[in-house]
Structure formats: C-alpha cells, structure tokens
Image 1 (spheres, helix red, strand yellow):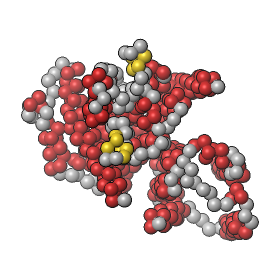
Image 2 (cartoon, helix red, strand yellow):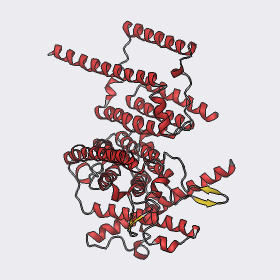
Image 3 (cartoon, helix red, strand yellow):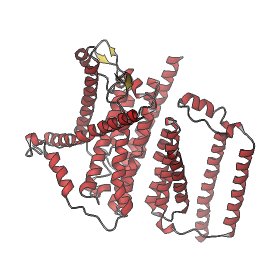
Image 4 (cartoon, helix red, strand yellow):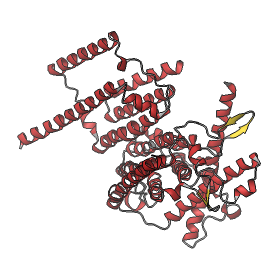
Length: 349
Length: 168
C-alpha cells in the first residue's frame, strides 16, 4: 500500500516536473524562433544566448503588482486560471515516457495512471480544456473577454469532432485502446528503414488530428480567442501578473500534451527513432534512456513545428474557421472513418 | 468507503444546487460538477471507460453547450421567475407520486434488468453485450425519456412563438 503510494507520488512529481521544467526552454525557443523567422535577434542579453530571459520573466511575473478589477465576478475570476492549468495538466497522467520497465522484481509502467483505456481518458479530460477559457471570459465581465471566450469555445467544440473521428479511425487500425499496445504495434520497419508509424497507415487522420490540435490549443492560425488586432487580448484581457502566467503555462502544457498524444498515435510514441536501436543493443537500461530521449526529441520537433506554423500562416477569419471545421474537415473525417472501418472489417474477416 | 460517501454527498449537494441556485450560470456549473462527480463514482467502481465517456460526452460536450448558451444570452433577467401556481403544484405532486410508485415497484419486484448493476467489468465488448442484452429495457427507457424531453422542449419553444404572434 505504502509502496504503491510512494510510486504514484514519484511518478506524479516526474511527470509534472518534465513539462513544467521544459516550459522556460519552450518559451525561449518560441521567442528566438520568432526572431529567427523575422530576421531579428530576439532576447539574447540575459545569460548565454539569452537563456536566462525566461527566468527573468518569471521573476517579473512573481513580483508584479496584481491588478484585481472591481467589476469581475470574484470567485470564478480567481478559479478560471487554476481550472485552465489543472485541466491542461491532466492528460499528461496517462502518457507513458518509456516502455514497461522490469525492475525490483516487477513491471513498472512509467505513467501515473495505468489503464487499458488510456487514450480515452486523455481525450476525455482534454475535452474539458475549454472550461477554463469560458470561465475566464465570463467572469471578466468584459465584452472583449466574453467574445474571445465564446470564439474559443465554439472553435474547440467544432474541431473536437474532426479530431475524434481521426482518433476513432486510429483505434480501429490498432484494434486497441491501450497506449502501450498502440506503440508496440508501431515499432517494426518496412524494408529495414521506414518505421511502421501510424502516419503511414492513416495520413488523412494524421492531418485531421494535426489541424485539431492547433485549434484545441488556440495556436495560430487558430488563435481567434486572443486576436490582438480585433479583441485586444480575448479571454485573458483582465488578468495580470501570475494569473496571466497561469493561462500562458496552460497553453504551452496543452501544446505539449496534445503533441505527445499525436506522437503516440502517429509517430510511434516512445518507440526508438531509426538508428537508436543500433546504439541500444540489448541493454535494458540504455533502451529506457533512449526511449525517453526519442519521445523528448519527437515532442521537441512538434513544438518547433508549432512555432514554424505560427510565423508562416496568418490568422483565419471566423467564417473561414467554421467552414473549414464543419464543411471540409468533418465530412473528410467521417469519410476516412468509414473507409477505415470497411477496410479493417474485410481484412479481419 | 469514506470516499464513496463523500462522492455521493457531493453528487446530492451539486444536484440540489442545480435546482435551487438563483444564478443560472452557477446552476449550469453545478450541473457540470454533478456530471463530473458521477464520472468519479464510475471511476471509483473501476469502469474507466464509462467514466471517460461520461466526461467526454456529458461534461465535455453537453454541459459546455448549456454553459455556452447561458453566457451568450446572459440569463440574469430570468433570475427570479419561480412563479407559484396551482397547476405546477398539482403536476409536480402527481409526478412525485408516480416516481415513488415506480421505485416501490422496482424494490418489491425483483426485475432482473433493474437489479444492482455489476460495473466492475472493464472490457468494452462485455459492457456493450450486456447493454444490448440484459439491460435492453432500461436502455430503451432512457431513449423514451430523451424523446419526451425533445417533445417538451418543442412545446415550450412553440408556446412562446404562439404568444408572440398573438401580440402582433
């Protein structure tokens, strides 16, 4: 009993520490990446390569005076950033950072919540992501915030549909809901070089999922919830100092969690990158280290992709957003699902 | 055990808040909390799939539409429209009596499909096999309930329309 409790506690600390510790680095990459694409230098004064800039920002957020507007609804106003961050952190609970580890005479699963319904759990809790934003917009009692929150909410609900169709298609392809089984069926190679990743089975589903995670995490080109040029700052307009920082963190953690889910379903999760299996050999400890490294590298590439897209595509107009979601992606997703189901049915007969 | 009691109490408290809270948005959030606590009860019983579906469908999609609409049209002007009428009292008493009768029937006659549900099975296949076999009657009753609520919503909205036409 005590042993199990300690195990869960340790796992929770590690799973929380990894993304929260990577946050300053991600924010730095985002700012330097933006500068790189716009042919400027970006923050490079604080520390080597400006690496200490995020720490300076944190210090600023901590010591800044907190402005508490008087026209807000106090309870919901205070609760909203916390809800946003907690809900963003929840899906991380069932993302495994490595394969099952045989140690201390038993099998340890490197995820906080082990279940054969892991993928369902992750998507269920990430569906709650819009509540934080909706609460913030409503509690701020401000027209711009309200507009931002309503936009975010409508967008998330619309794109969740096409995202779910791609998830269901992948569950049919793998024939399981278990994340570990999904990943182990992606470990092989075609012709000894091309990894058997889900992306090559289901490129359409991968595309739908990719668009879905951009919309779910409110990143450009889907950042209508913030839209500086139209509604000032959207749902977090009335928030300052640490409360704003919580929303900021929630957005990045949402990005990390959704990227990790994308990688689990389409790019082999923690399965070793091509070439890593030659280094690892049969050393179990080295395999675990390289598995963690593979996952981290894949997520880092996804984050870089987020930054890349942000400075490549302009923001959609609202009607374009809704047309894309309901008239293009959803029929495409349903058609893809039907074809997949028929294919799987006739293959298994 | 303690956690079961706590979750049950929370469900009751939040459900009561849905009915009796004066602010519509607070009521909507209480509804959300009720749904989430019920999902936690499923989780506590060991059915991760059911609790995930409860969160995904009810809390993630349906409740968000309630909250969305209530925020959009800002229902604060309807805060205290709990008018008391004789008809309301009669109808609600009748409904209560019928419900009590149904409960008495269920408790006295050991209907198999309405007995204690064993939820500890985690596999989806067996769950759905049971749903479409033993628990077919409750399942169909739930659909009838949904149909009734659809009819009710149509009646409520068309009533408003008729009144507006009369005003013109």
